[in-house]
Image (cartoon, rainbow, N blue to C red):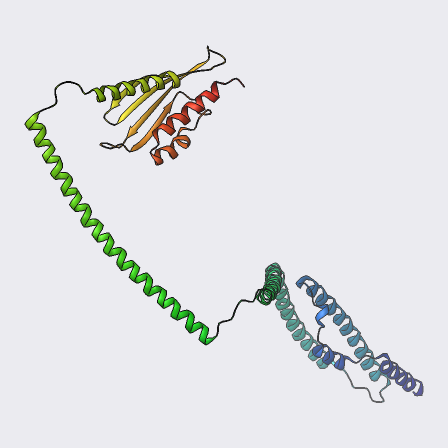
Length: 340
């Protein structure tokens, strides 16, 4: 009997020295706080949690084993061991079945929870990545804002302008008010002058109408002058000579009035180095009806890759420069005739 007591005491002493403090370990586990430097990605946290759960299961099995050994030893070494009958066995069996059912429900709930965790883990990872990127962008924006503020402070310090005082600001405002009054007076004078100009133009238009009517009456009364004027004849001769020189120099072959507001000019260009190389160019000048304003111009005699007609003629059409348009087209044609 003493040997059994000594063995029980030795076992109890070994259990105390083993450091199996399950109750305190559970309390320490609840009060444990993770360090910030150990926190990382959600996958790393899940792996760490899984390892801790496995470790707790091993501790639980060890605890149950030690408790069973302790109860068995107490039952053996006791002077009057309790009698265990069929009723006690049934009670223990029923309690075991209830415990198993509860454990099964808990396992099912835990499995469902794990399934939810596995399903939501990618979403959590995506949200974590988004938060990480947003935090990084916020940090970059904060650093850029700080750099901009520092640059602005340095710029203000290096290029500090004159600071206005109350007196200088009032003086500046007074000078601006005076300038505005002067400009207002100038505007009124300009309006009066414009009104005078309009009245003057109306009078001139009336005078012009009167003179035209008088001229018409005189022409009806006296008729046209008999005999040609020598000055008009000389002017006509100079005009014809100018046209002939232009035709000879520029290669103008013909002019054709296609419509009331359309004039077609036909040019034959030839190379000075090669007399067999020639090109016929037709320039159609379209004017606004009843005016001398150029509306549109069409150039014929070039391929699409040789000349962009709209790009070449648009500037001259906007400026109403017919001589410049004709000269530009002819120069482009002569350049194409030159040997490369």
